[in-house]
Every structure is written in C-alpha cells, then in structure tokens.
Length: 196
Image 1 (cartoon, helix red, strand yellow):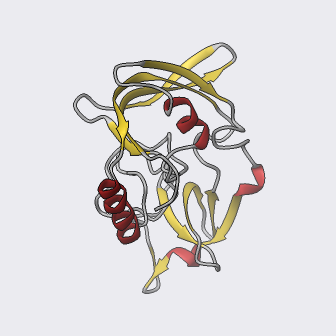
Image 2: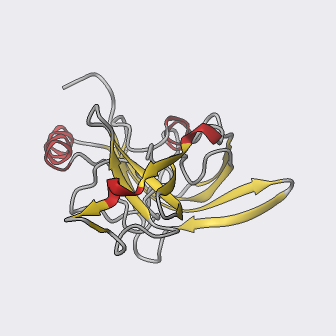
C-alpha cells in the first residue's frame, strides 16, 4: 500500500459551463444515483478532487475550474480527417456506428485508447474531433457531499483489483462518453469530473 490517504466520497452534483456571464447545465447526477469515487486514483480531474477532498458529509460545494484545470483549451489540430476505409468492416462502411454525432472508441498505433466525436461523414473522408467535449470550457460544479470517509485497506485493495480487471475508473454510460478510457462493463456513473 502507498502512503496516500484514500477516501470514499459519494456526492450529487450539477455541472454548468460558464460563457460570458451565462451558465448552461451540462449534466447532473440522477435522483438516487449519486457519483461515488475513491480519491487518490485519478478517477477525477485533479482540481476537482482537490476541491472535494477537504469537505465533510452533508457539506455543499460550489467551485469553478478553468479550462486549464479541466480539459484544456480547444485545439483545432485535434480535428482530423480519416480515410473512410478505416471504418470499413468486410468491405462495408460501418453506418451503424459511424454517423454525425456519434462518439466512437479509437486506438492509435501505440495502443492508446481515446474517444472521437464524428463531425462529418464524406464520400472519402470522415471528420473526427478528438477534443474533449468540454475542452475550452470553464466548469462550475455545484452539489452536496452525501458521504465522505477514509477508505479501509480492504476497500482500497478491492478497488485496485477492480481497476486492474476493467481498466476504467469511472463510468461512461450517462456522460456521453466523456471518459476517454477503456471502460469495463460495470461502468455506469457520471464522469465529467473524471479525467476522461
């Protein structure tokens, strides 16, 4: 075990993006389905974790993360054109999964996995946006800590074993694929606070 103090934190939250004095609700936890994380494992953005770590059960929070603290600035060079043939299976284009608006898992030559947003499907090229959907955005998290306590050694070891078997620290089902990791079949929580 390492010397990091791991905490189990359960929280409900609403995530807003801020733009020129106006806020827009991006996502929120569902009633009865709060987000649960174990700190110290990179499940969330580092600055998100820094803000919630000191808080106690029943405490409210309201904090802002700049793009640099969240998902970085939007980078036009991360919008790429890929040969349509890349998305061909048995000589047929994968219309079922590759369409404008789709979020698709991709892998580069080094084996790194990430998510791409399909922006255009042309006759020869497919435009894929590799920026995180919240890149360039200022984020405002508001919510309540429902539970915050130190994790036991057994809980930490169980979590490590689960991470090793699923390779995913947070869920992707409800967040539009913001994770950016290889998600296991037990994923199911919000994760825009994650490092996805």
